[in-house]
Amino acid sequence: MNHETYFFEKMPREIYYRFKSRGPKGEIPKIVRLSWADEKQYILSFGDKDGAASQFNDLIRTNNNDCRKVLATVAVTAIDFLSMYHGVSIFAEGSTESRTRLYQRHIAAILDQIDGRFIVLGRRNSLWEPFCRGVNYDAFMLTRRPGFPVFG
Image 1: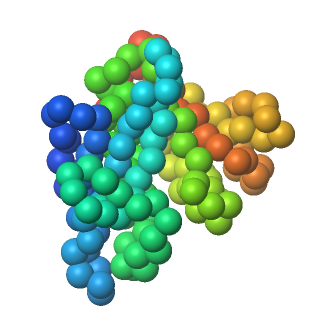
Image 2: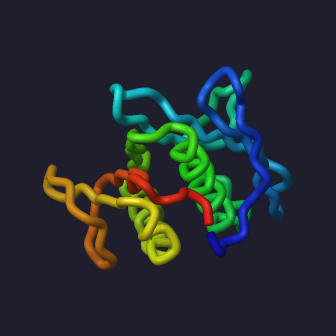
């Protein structure tokens, strides 16, 4: 991906990643968690670290002037996850409507960079369809295309 990202750390015993946002408000620890939904799907969620170990709050507005870098880092953790777990999908939606729109704009910005390696779907009116720029979705799904390298 061509966007700047933060260094992230993969936590070996659980499926989560951590990194630090850096900006005018200082260093703010972030957590990205992939939770098992069923045998073929994981749910991606992330937010500011809140409390012990892998706990986080996905409603806090950090305003650390690094939103693009944070979202690019979250995208790279999803790609890293799919490089290890073949045949699964990642489901994501914002904790608020405005966050869902923000995620949609970021997906649209990186779509050309990931399109050949991943299938990106958007959910609209309870139906899944190939992600298209300019269409409003309420959730997203990312799956690795079989036979394509994840990184490259």
